[in-house]
Amino acid sequence: MKQDIILAGVGGQGILSIAFVVDNAALKKGLEVKQAEVHGMAQRGGGVQSHLRLSDVRIYSDLIPRGQADMILSVEPLETLRYLEYLSPAGMIISSRAPYLNIPDYPPLDNLLAEIGKVKKSLIVDSDKLAKEAGSSRTGNMVMLGAASPFLILEEADLKEFLRVLFGRRGESIVNANLKAFDLGRRVALDRGLGL
Figure 1: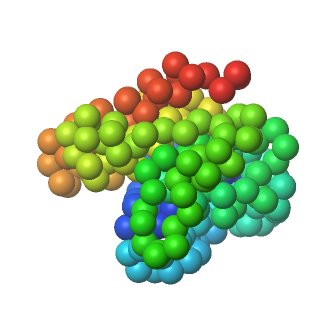
Figure 2: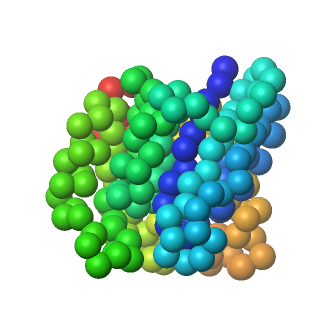
């Protein structure tokens, strides 16, 4: 059992938070975990990506070879396309539809979404809308983790446990908003199914 995941987004969108939850849920399950450092601009607004590798056997490299990723989990549509070459032919994309307009010549959103939609197993999530429904516009990353959760080799309960650990010091209302965001994203994915 193994799963290779590219996390993609923009600085400040919570890629490290997603990685923390996934890494710890995988460790709890007894899996080996390799995570490449987050690459990209270490400032708010710069493109970032990280490689997450989960397996029940030894992993020798932190980096996922091009064409081998089982999943691209992205919180920004332009960043989704930036890493498309890493996706395996049988891989899936879980992408937010919410653009982070940080460059003057940002491509038309409809064009980006159409390109993502060309991948047979792709799910585009309105994470901004669902985050607001969860009670905080800052929970978009947990919406996206929830949307990916049915397709991860991890247990929902373990993901939620480490979501609580991550946000626990910020208070119960923050924990609850993030849990609700996770559940809303998960429901979208389960309703859509990706043909799995």
